[in-house]
Length: 257
Image (cartoon, rainbow, N blue to C red; front, side, top):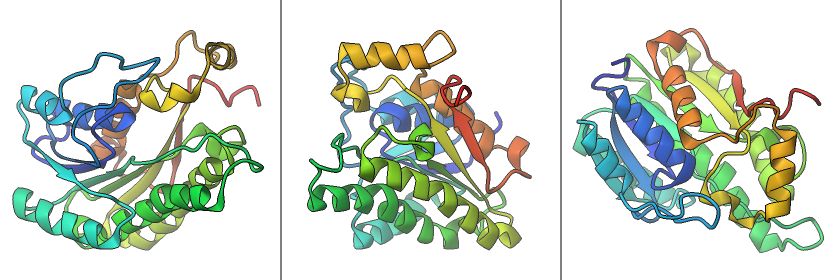
């Protein structure tokens, strides 16, 4: 087990990509703090239509420890309290995965300022705060790892001005933080998923799903497990000399551009 006994935090881990990451970290031996607004997984219109078990339950089936923490990562005090509680419950923190994010699929004409700022408060400011308050803990670890989840849309439009802007910002924040904490032997990397089969895709129509399939060179969409295995690699000793990098996991979406 590459992550045997290590302690991981995954935000937005009840559903979708976060759930997949949390389960795959546990599959490789990590104990996982599951952070989200709701413990029950989201059931989507196109994907995960009948999912029932919680992420904690799935992790415990794998023989690892897990606890759920209800946290709004856009609330600074809540983030501070989260670290105090998790460090008390688990004793240390080795891996932090910033996956929590929201999407408002509106264009510049339609999105309100409040909606734009809400996306920024979760996707960017929330990730910043989770990272900022993680540093005292991961710097003490022999295996300090911070992993952000961005998007292929960090490199182009298509998700609305708020989503694409925040996801692009995460790529550069990764590089900046990686340089800052390198002397503490902490790595910071970012994964940019392509089209992944999760409830986040509920806004799609059958026509836009077909178009996304056409634009993905590999003959299937991605799954949360695909992103989970990428996160396991970046969290493991196999990636101990990789930092400040962007790992695109998109089925080849960006390759023809």
